[in-house]
Length: 288
Image 1 (tube, one colour):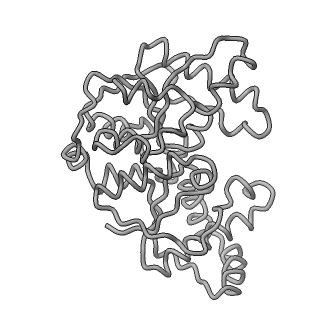
Image 2 (cartoon, helix red, strand yellow):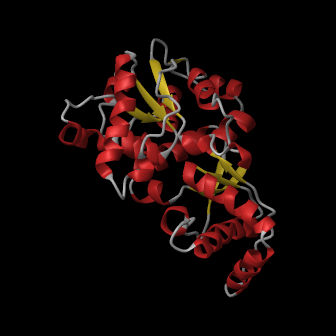
């Protein structure tokens, strides 16, 4: 299976573990990820509110590049996945907006025809490769490990857009269980991690994230598995900041990308999966 690979801004500029592990693990499963020359930000974070037409143009432009390659898109970012779905729907319904976008694309010799689809990595792993094939790829079963999963809001919300998972998300759970680990429900599973507030109110974001991590720790689990770079940044990278904001001790909850966990189960070296970039004590997982 070949896809136009769209990692998104965060994975390329900050979340290097996400990028490295996706390339390593997905390649082992036989996925061919083609680089998208000339791709840019999808526009969701930067322009969705300040300049909606710019957001629609940027998302459509990236999809037009994929169409030129004759490929569907695979993204490893929840917000990019949401962005592509929202823009596709908007351009199908608003012909005036579509005309504006078409004119801008035409200046680069591009055209958006809605021929390519954008798939989230969870969709590709669960729906196209399949849980059995992933289970068959495991060399080091993760037995005796118990995890909480953090699917991230935009893996399953809003449901009217046909998001990668259902209202009661289960695909990430099934993918973790395919590696031999146990997935345990916890009270805050479907709660937002707080990432959407990070730029405007970092303190509130950290308090929201701390409640989620506290819920995991009180459930006596080995860590949190997520697929979303924004959730990861909040739950992993920000753990060191939580004591000063909340007044409590550092929780020290391991947070790991699913693609990192998949790679470990496949026997891939931790460094090649970018685990050295995780801030939380993830070594508690892969040294067990």
